[in-house]
Length: 362
Image (cartoon, rainbow, N blue to C red; front, top):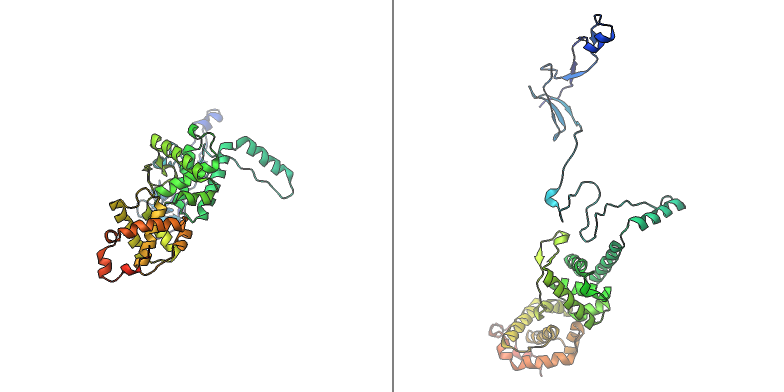
């Protein structure tokens, strides 16, 4: 492809117009010189020129011979793009302004006024007046709650998806009539607890209680209310924050969800964690430890599996990590030890990976 400078060509004179004849009193008008400039191809020299503006490449090309007459041309046409496929809540997003935050209310197309130059009071007064007029108090309260949820989740190193789900739950239920009179801290704690369950990183009530300083019973009461609200409304969690829609379903915490984290904190291998999970499944199948909390079951099975695979840990050390007393662990382990022949996989003993003699004595 070759480039060439555009040539100019135009008729030397233009015929007189009817308006000019009338202005001269009907007398013969003079031919006028044509001062318009026409761009033509220097090779074809066609008049009128057959020029094509390729805005996608920024080139001006002769449509007859393909000679490039100009590059880096600017597209001066109007842009009327819409993002109808990306609509959320039947909105029509425009390309002006930042992206709409689905966790807040309103259009969010507010004007922000800066404080201005240092030492100037006019900018500060305008900013204060603008905040009073424009800012929604409800959005301010939501932002404060979201900030607190993020801080609490980061304190326990919870993944970002848990934060987003907890914020989504909080927005859906924070103004529900069934939660009137409940403290905001208890609603935030219950939202984090439900978000952990929904995303497969379950936490116990005691852990959420230590994280948020909200009493365990209060978290339990608010949790039940929020769960009923979500089940009755059939809400889709994370639908408003761009993730895959998932209808809320009541999910319980079992001992297997807690074992990997406890074993990691105790410095145990994945073999012990897998063995503890197998023992917990067998115990549930046989009806052993029925009615006990998942934390007690997880701690007792880890206590048994660690001794079985030669990585024994004391009941007191496991109790510190799990948040239960060592007496609870030993009481639960007693039932596991009595049914040890049903709970231990014979393949472990045959392969000499485990030894029954390593089990803690009752």
